[in-house]
Length: 173
Image (cartoon, rainbow, N blue to C red; front, side):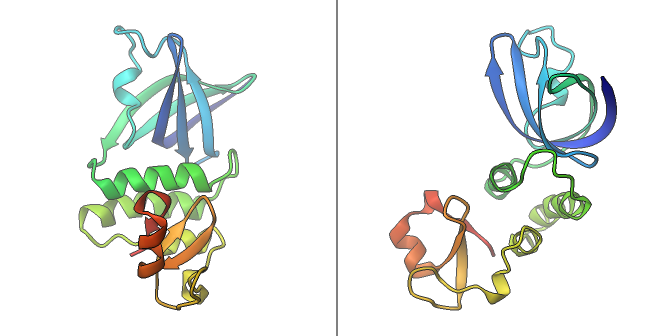
């Protein structure tokens, strides 16, 4: 049984009986799924510290998966549509337990850029191996790309993205 103390950004949650599964992006372990026992109970000491869009210091134990033993809120990020889209993007596009310090630092910086209205998904896409500077629209081959499809892992220009639908793509600007 290993124990970890690390900073984490809460990406998402899933309910499981009285327990809750948390999707975290941590500075030490990358993206992980961790269970918090009885986190859905009204008396849970962890519930308020583990909301999506929170940066939290968590203590984890690894025994048949990760379990959250303790958590303390460091800060809560603003719940803007861009911030929620960023959480979903990181959840979909990163692999579990593949630690990458550059992604962690860029993720933290991205929340500051969202707050200052300077956010762009391009740096994260570049780190994940999708170089937007060299990409073209998957449909019309236009070099003026504005959107990325996490599901298909391709870029689209504005005109082609409208045809596909806003639910399938994220803006990279």
